[in-house]
Length: 266
Image (cartoon, rainbow, N blue to C red; front, side, top):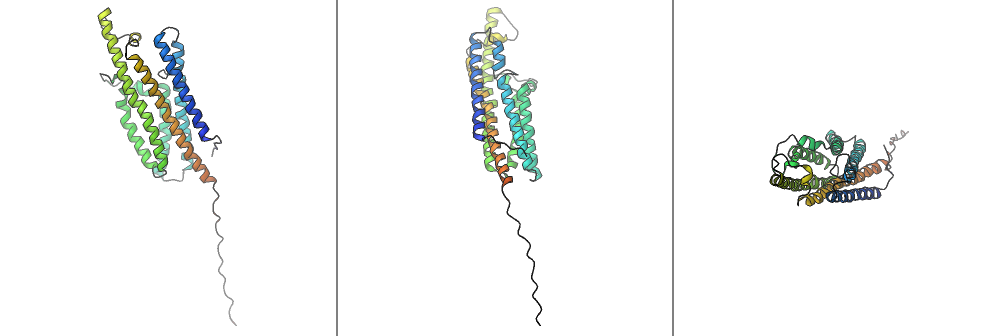
């Protein structure tokens, strides 16, 4: 069993600080890129939360991997539990690792592009494919872990709500802003240049809804990164409780009492 000597509060505060700093830096470079198109592309690729391979993307993937590793430690400490609980723990490990891979290569968006959906949800159409099975698996896991600790499940649920408020709620809103910006750019291009093709990507960033899109995107990714921070904190507490329980001294087993046979009377 591995030992974690770092104080959980300090570790969580450090993770939270890194998350906030990366989010603010990403917002700043995206705003500067909107005002100065040239000379900021390299910095945007490095710091923007909306770019694949950026520092915030890898930080989010790292936190999800750390949550998966911590869940693995808890699962090992609970190997004497019933098989349904063990299955829930190992499924949770696989879920965190899958989210980490998905975050690093934007797998959900790549697969979501195969779905055909017109309108303001065009850029968030992956939600229709991923959200229903993800909720079913998550509910099944939390139902099994409720028997272990209600506090654990409540903490994990808070993390799920924060994560989904960004991944689903804010992404739906930002998809609406982007669709409106692209639609406006296309109409202006048709009027001024007679273009009939898809709107050029550079033009839609000049629309009036682009700045709401940037702010919404920053909040969206911030919430998606805060979810793993909450999960890690809850799992850290659970792991330390399991570790303390394993180190607790066990009550000594009483020695067997040998019956005394009375001496025979003369």
